[in-house]
Length: 319
Image (cartoon, rainbow, N blue to C red; front, top):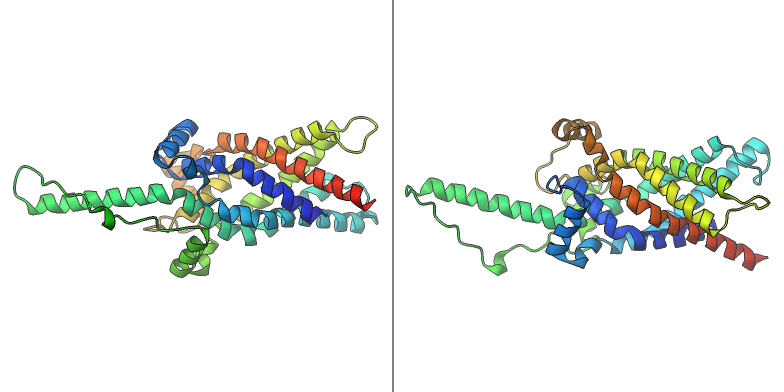
């Protein structure tokens, strides 16, 4: 039932947090945004509400599988560790056991989440990337026209007909995946997976460990589990702590995955870290941290309360 409960919790979490995830991705990849509200306002003015939900279809369709795998792997690893170390799957696990199980649950996600993340990030950023490309092309045309005309007055470059203006490169999640695979090969679908491995492993170790500790603290005397308010608080805080650990590698992962739309800037994980820090300072590694934490609290409140409710319901039905 951990696999089923994890799937339910994951879907509920995505539905709550996706708009803020779109804003986070744009802030991390676009230096023009000075803050959260600037990005929100600009996205709304350019693309309206739909702009906040670009690329949602693929995460919604895959998150149930990914979340199911995470929670199921965590529970299975913890059960096997307890059976191996203490002789019983029902023994109380040590914090080291919880950390190792959480780390393992994060690692197994990468195989499924990397292609999804590539498609999501490309769809979330393609509007601004396309606009930048068009602006650069127009500037190059003006320079060439100015060089070919001796007149002191620069010629006006006529706007292209509406029919000639290129549409979005990616028409949807599946088209995005197919285009990336065709243009960049299988490696393109796993771009940034090294950063994703580092992000998921450490963040999920923090995630499950902090949830376990907070749940224990918030459990009323004489009870074996916290009440609903305790689950909500523990889940929300666990999400915030996990994203605090994950944000530096999340920034690098996002930049590596966006890279390749045009000229490739980064040669790999280390080169991306060094280049980003040299150009924008160490603060660049924490771009989107405030937004990640603001998004993580309500999302993971919903994830854990849905997960625990599904587990308790299934136990009640099986009795």
